[in-house]
Length: 297
Image (cartoon, rainbow, N blue to C red):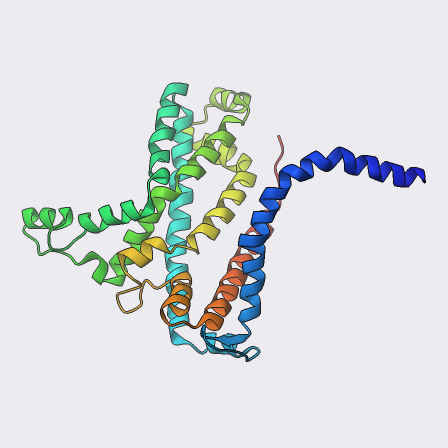
């Protein structure tokens, strides 16, 4: 037996324990992620309505770009995602910077307060949100009555519904970015802030000249993860507006769900899913490209 073969055998035996630990996760990944992903791509080339399945090539993809509802869904998805991304990044970054000046105990309490909404069920949050903004008996209706103004149908107007949806999604999206930004800010050497204070820098200048430039890699990571999450909002839209009014809050993912489980157009729904995957991949790749420069200190 050659030395090379012996070395390979010893290496495999040495790593066997690690591979055994990975095996359960890998098995579940193949069953519940890899196989459905590949199968979804495969049936996107078929006219599949549960009972019948016939190969139609790229016809589903051609239909997508001729579908007016898809164009509306893309527009609504990008509008909501833009508000969610900008709002989440600005609020979480500002909050993390403010928390930096607090004591350790108050920092921990602040992080806990912002993290709590993320562990609450989205369904429960949506139910509370619907009750608050119900135009007939919600808190907003009571406030409007006290002010002597007619009740507002918040989710009956797209211009009001989209910002409210964005705020609701942000309420449970900001928790992890705040934790990540706080950890990154705490990792910045205190010497830099002390030196800037000696030079007369204010907190605002410290943020723009020290904190923000050194957070560039972290900001890039949070931007990409927030973008991916915001383009896949489903539960809030499904329960809060159902995609209305007049399809104004219909996202691409909601369109996928309806075509698959309400209209039984599995092939077309799979094609929509593939297009959504490509949109997310392209946007994420562009963001990584724009933020590829790393800063070390």
